[in-house]
Amino acid sequence: MPFSLWLSLAAVCAMGAMSPGPSLALVLRHTLGGGRAPGVVAGLSHALGVGFYALLTVWGLGALIVRQPALFQVITWGGAAYLAWLGIRALRAGRAGALAAGAAPTTRRQAAREGVLVALGNPKLILFFIALLSQFVTPDMSLAAKAVIVLTAMIIDGGWYALVALGLSHSRVLPWLQARSHWINRITGLLLLGLALRVVAGPLV
Image: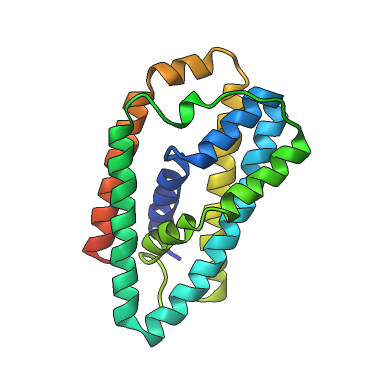
């Protein structure tokens, strides 16, 4: 995979990881309830579930492109519609959302278990990855290139939530984020809408 193409992949993976939702709420809750370590553990274990869905999506997309190109196109448009819906929801969220997550007592073991379960229990990740990875998967893509895609999604997801946990372990960070949550939601919504338009425009490869 060319480096410029990988940069595009990394950018859209980052947008997906940074979008507000149950995953961010999970990391916030474990960080605020148990400190830095449970928050980091929750983020890293969440990345395992993300990697599992990314792997399934890469394998499925490759086969679908070859066997059912028309169906692949329809599914891709459906994924784009889902991204647009996420973007509109973020724009309408205002100051509400995951940044208001409460703090409950938690442990590393609980954080690890819930991190994986939140990812695996969110089948909408499949829709997101279909919309995302349809821009990068080709019928003749090698196993190594597919591995790069899956590892990129995992590392960026786990790295982002680990950084969130590390940042939130400082008491001044969360109030700062909460005060600016409406801008965070607006920026995220615009980025997701832009990504949806890019998916409709066609693959990057």
